[in-house]
Length: 150
Image (cartoon, rainbow, N blue to C red; front, top):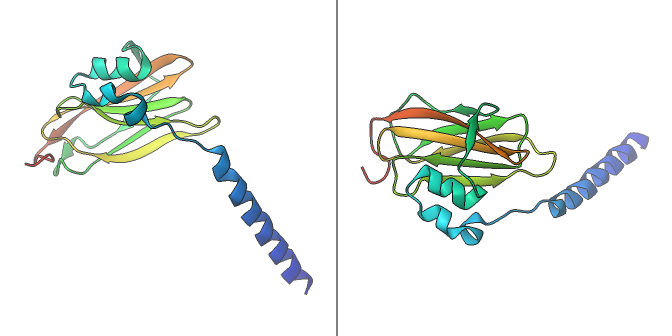
């Protein structure tokens, strides 16, 4: 009987914690707040719209993407860093350069994986804002079948 009570109290404690956690999270709608960023066809212009600058430094960011993507419609991309407050993923071959922007919650882990589209061979960029500075990593991805209607 005692084990059952302990199990039930533990379950109620987990339930209570799960109700509290989501209320502390928030998201920024960058499509609404920074609409011009999504219209830019140049990496530098999109970065200026999102971050206010396009000055970046190499390092502190890891970008994982395939060397060759057999299907440009589903290219897996992973961005990670030890710290950061915002993350942006961009590419330089589609009409709009900006792919995604994430706001990292305080104490959050920078480890995001997405699938992007690229219509032809080009470069993928990962930008992480940390301490008011932008850090980048880039990688060329060879696309063998176009992902944007090709």
